[in-house]
Length: 301
Image (cartoon, rainbow, N blue to C red):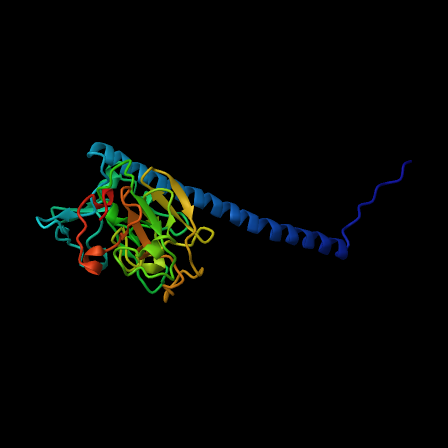
């Protein structure tokens, strides 16, 4: 008669070894899973910006090769917006690409006619239109839902009216250089870094100042986010998109040190015929008393 087989239970030491092995594997896998999820969100974010600049190009093809306006213009060429029923000043004077006011009602802007009114296109899947400062309450947006910011992506508004195939060049100076000048001195112009194409849309930092001014425009002290491996996405006129890692101290929250961080005021543009003259792009009207006409970027001066 063959001997009977007897079962043997795990000893305490063996059980502890198994638990420790599982714990080590979890510790190894969780960061990898987290990184894979963030990589997926980054790809989706880039896809959103791609759709936005593609829509901008589609609009231009329908309207004399020019990118959509940011606002209406009066007889003097100055911008204006229709009266907005929203009592919150942070949500007024929103770029027309993002929001229109028709018959006293706020409705989605020009871009959404080309994107099937898909409001989530304006939302980075990492930030999800949240305010960075928890003290800032969510506010009602144009889709009757509540978000901390209206859009995680905003338009460099001086690019309104730029033509497809425009040959102007855009570049930036380092944060520690003087940007409070309409035309760069020659010595500073020699240090400018030229961008790959004319930038239209920036993945804006929620801290600086997207949660405070929900206007869909990138200008003045506005900064690029650092949420994607210390960078943010930029969508260009040629419909390309790139993750841009701007000069920064790596701190994306106020109070910011403007001498260490790239901001919109650091952007300058050069006419193809005057490549040695670089003109400040943002807010020239109140910074320098110069009103930029619609389509100014085609022949900056």
